[in-house]
Image (cartoon, rainbow, N blue to C red):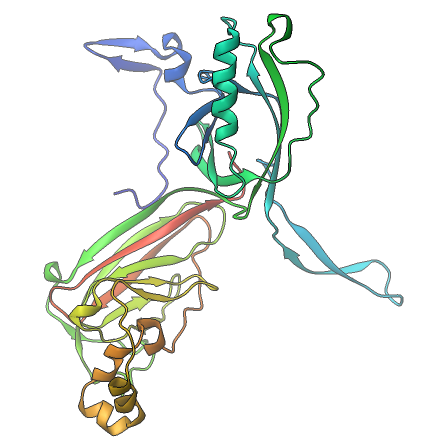
Length: 361
């Protein structure tokens, strides 16, 4: 499992079969030295727009591409008649917009009219304004980075003639895409910890939130472990945890020393997700229950609820049983060692860290 960026030394030769082939003699597709650009349509079609395989599906990128390098931002400033200049207060990050030109047809060997019609129909079938496709960019230095995109505006390119007139069988279009998620991503890094493979349980340390609250924590013993995972992106990231039931888990607040106890769950709750990103729903259970009058009556009586060991919580969604919050993030280019704990000897916790980038390469 990769937990940090690795940059191995480059090789001048590559082993192919039983012999050694000079790297410079490999086909361009194997060298991967060009900038690759692919589009994965919502219907599953793939288009190689740039790179050594460009135009394989009858569509390729023209010379222009705008919006993939620097991510969008807007400087918010305060102006005053009594102060020269202005004061920057913050930066707003809106949606990302792309402007690109594509060419359908005009390849070697030349397309027939029927081939052109097939490529044209396939391309426009993948331009769905109600669903996201995926734009992927690759260089040998940066690897693959992905961004969900969809058409932003109606195509305004005028075609002076029928694309198939005089046997041309080609057309050029100016496309505008938008991405509500302005950053590129790579596959997230994750690690899994199992309580059964840890040592003997012991009480929680003093830095756990709410340790001295009798109603939240009755001095339980926990199995403990550490999950080292890197945020190799150039943007802050937030951990996501998948926790098993039954029992009570303890999770670290990203790159900090805060330990947060999770709700004490029953087996019927199943696996639940803890999303530490602000603005997202923090707790989501795979089997969130439906509330009823019996559980509501028990919750109204704090003494009855205490002696029934939280039985009333079985009648409400999991996120309504927890009042704490996560406050920290994982800085860019940082390895965080998540401290995790679980009261059950069969507890399993998986930590996931998304990799986010401002630029496509």
